[in-house]
Length: 440
Ligand code: SAM
Image (cartoon, rainbow, N blue to C red; front, side, top):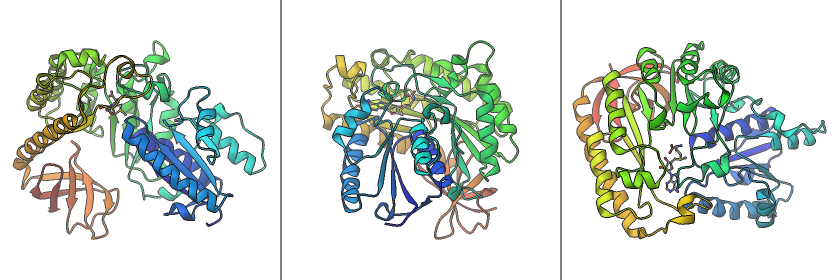
């Protein structure tokens, strides 16, 4: 174990990664430096997700390993943060009883606990936990200075929608929009550290500002302002709920060059009965209309979606409606999840998880193989076309990794562009999930 080192382990969504980076930035501010292997670290930071049982299982198995490390070196500190901890009063005591070797329990998007611990360690005054939220720098020093091209910026914390299946409102608390000046200050801080692409985050980001009262800035204006920040080349935002995408939002994306033509709009199911049981608040028809409206206004826009298969009671026919809807929508990506009952959610409490695991798997595979075929066909005409990519990563073999404005992944060979540069490349191969390209 090396003194003043930390190791970050993170699973789950972009929001978790953003929370984890913020915590890492605080550790680095206190003199810790990152190490590649957990066994070398004095401080172990675990950022967790519980959206599906599978994620929770991964945390438990990681914690077994961490327990061994702690037993070998009891002076290590173990911090568990994120949705596994949650906000509920009493949760920490229950977790402490289960995992006595964990020193710190940090709720999602709330780093006050860690700030207090660091202050106590430094021998300073204990800080008021809540006052620290939002203050730490958004990017650890080890990732700054041009090393990180794309960063996430949470703008709506929590969620109040309460979809029947979703644990997030129980773990991340109610919806809270961050004040616009705080978001803009953070966007400037990210740009100042070399970040070129900022992805604004929220569970239902298109509701940004609604909880701040009448007259508060809404998402279109916030996006325009972030796009104006010096040094920021590209801006994206996710996730959108179909019910809250306004014409103004679509127009803003269409008319602001730095706003990438890309929407993430989970649909979750193609059957109206399943959508109603999920408490999603729209029909498949309305979702289709919305996608048509966006495509009509923004040619070449990328539309990505999420789909759950095997929701309680989902019949073969209803699943067929999901396949059909995906065929009609022809999205640019589908993230398919097999339904997983989560504690306290409406579906787990009131609806039997009655689609057998092998049937859920069959439905997942059916969606994914249809998606692969659809994307291969959709991308084939892009062979030989020129794409504009922002170089986000340089692979060990020199390949440049970047994304097109509509969110397609491109690997460029023989390209000498630096990290953070926007370059034009010509596709020499197109597949379902990525393109290979050469310099123009
Ligand atoms: N807030 C977004 C939304 O409007 O759906 C995304 C939230 S969640 C982090 C990401 C995805 O996980 C969801 O879109 C959904 O497809 C999936 N998901 C959430 N709860 C699930 C569950 N109980 N079982 C399976 N998948 C689930």
